Image (cartoon, rainbow, N blue to C red; front, side, top):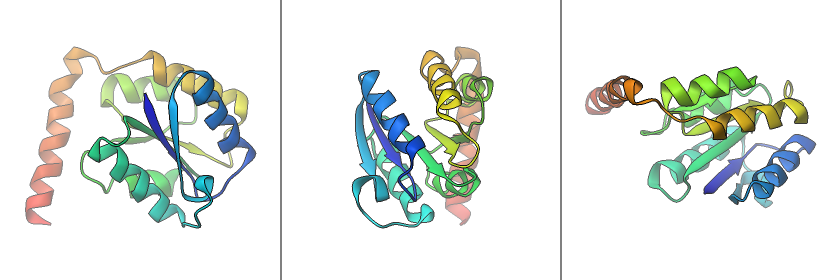
Length: 149
């Protein structure tokens, strides 16, 4: 799977997650400071979200200090369902109930051990069939607001 990874800064956690994704057999596409490019979290988040929405990447992993801003920025891009996950159970639910396609983690609050647990949950779960009508409702909401926005 091709996974875009972006952050507003390169840290021990971003390096750990990139190596963990590669170890799991994923092709990693680093963006922003992770690729040597100076970008604020807003633009790094948008760049990652554009890659996922356009199909250039299958999924994304995104970081910022709290994770909140990166989540908000990514979710501005149509087709993105970015989920800020602080633990494995939240990551599991984001996939199961929300069909999340961008995983967001806090640089401040996520340890490598917790990040590994989050990745385990993220990649072990997928949207359940009975949740797909709800995901279509999310797409309908997005479409209505695109028309009026």
